[in-house]
Length: 320
Ligand SMILES: Cc1cc2nc3c(=O)[nH]c(=O)nc-3n(C[C@H](O)[C@H](O)[C@H](O)COP(=O)(O)O)c2cc1C
Image (cartoon, rainbow, N blue to C red):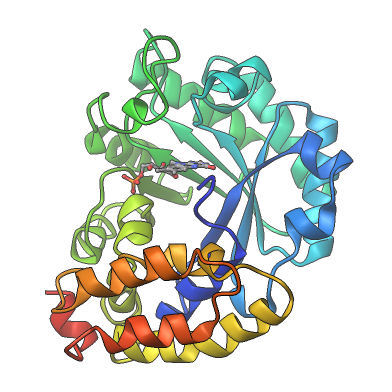
């Protein structure tokens, strides 16, 4: 997610779940081909498994970028066919590609030919006046013929004119049944459901029907929920028994990053929602929001914030 799932965010999320697949922000082919690759693509080995999301619509450029990403060590290359922003539409990629299923198929085929890692697509159920039955099916057929490894479906339409990207995540109604029908029609394909999933318990309920679930806003804004991913979805122990323990394990990473010149706030901004509902959470959040932005702020600011949280809460309690 743009501005959200940068490498600091992903490193922290990996402390909360060993098993969830983490995704980068969308990176355009132009940025990767012409930009500072180490800054854009560099990540910490601890983040694995991590997928890169690419934005583009030129098969050759996407193939080149998928190969670059594979060489950087990414575990999956995902093509964005769901972003409705004006900037993305001007570049003729993102959600507007829902109207060009054959081009998406060509993109996937080119990426598949270039790499050994899985190539996946994230799409909507349709755009504008499209009929989601036909539009999603056509896209599915095109990417299936191209050998796609999984399709992640944000279960609502995108309206390309008239709605902001934020509204396009809220206004068009969710239609989980459309994604369920897609899975029933293509049982051999790996289908992941996305959109409006607020808890790991809700995610678990969908996994009986589809092969996987992607959580966006809930995972980012309420990251404590990720502590129940491994127990509830994979039957394994959580990496830590509390959010506090996870933050303590995060501090050495924070210190290393500060020593490299990273500003504290650009790391701690991702963990503001960590103690939601726990006594002291507001003070923790306020302390980080006001102190971590100050020049020279160090890891002690984070320790100070942690001291304001009054209770230890076990992962299974907060997940309830
Ligand atoms: C700040 C923000 C940035 C996002 N950036 C991307 C992105 O780069 N690529 C993408 O496929 N979806 C992006 N999304 C959409 C989410 O991946 C997801 O599809 C959407 O929020 C619905 O899922 P949710 O209800 O679990 O959040 C973004 C969402 C938000 C809130």
